[in-house]
Image (cartoon, rainbow, N blue to C red; front, side, top):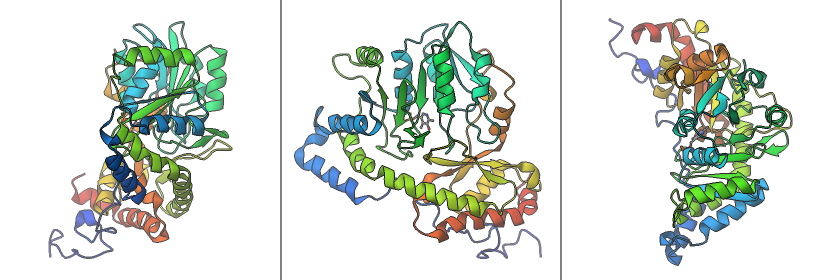
Length: 396
Ligand SMILES: *Cc1c(COP(=O)(O)O)cnc(C)c1O
């Protein structure tokens, strides 16, 4: 019998990518949650008519909530996390010829926002085991043209904010802290996003707090808030968050702390389960007094241990099993012309991150069933056991 005949269909021990039965035949859990509390606010917004108002009270309430939670004075809702970063850069007067330091492994929109303002992104390398911005690389990145640092906490990792802020103060530089992936996370005993001069959240459709679209930024600097206000208000707000978007965020903010705790405890369990899979390592967490948020859980895929199976094929095989795993970001120096940026050093770890990062999407991290977490490890184990065969039969 030839190998391609379908004698494994329905066999749960055989990889779904080769025709076996998927570990999760129904696929990964969906997002957003079917949350009754969200339905309630939608009904209320309909009954009161506020869903169709410019100023129905929901945006105002959201600003007050976030201001209280983060202990920040100025909260500016806007149309997306990407716009929030752009407004933050404008609030710091970044312009042509200025340099902004960021990690070479970061959200592409952050790089593009710097270019949009005519400024030059200066890329620093990431750390070896957590793949967050490596603060040891900051010194070599600074020039007389440096005007700001833009730092993002990614994939459940945390940038060492105490070290970033110490460096920034020493050099008189403002910091934009992108906390889009971890609203409500605690870093060094303090809310993520509040270390920097300006913090940023996203309410995009896949994010932990979702309104489909939307974002906000926050700062204690009156000059920055004023500059952003002058730029964004043109008789009306030019990058608004709508009343309806703000309304659906209210109950999600109520549940944020609890859900972050559930995700964190599930990540701890998943870390233990994945110890049995060689060549698949969750990002390390090294900061004390911290509780990261998990929009994604970052994992390192060590290809040398996978019998010729590539990272991207592994991700494809996991998705066939019903587990939402994808390749991470492309590193910025690898997808942009060298004329667009300056590299502060060799970007060796960012090269590795470009090739080795995988991300597990967050919805499964809210599960209350240990069995569902086990399924992630079971799927990885199944692929591990058939790695050579998958590589060969899927054409690698
Ligand atoms: C999602 C995200 C953004 C942008 O948010 P949008 O609302 O999608 O524009 C920015 N930075 C990081 C790290 C993100 O994950």
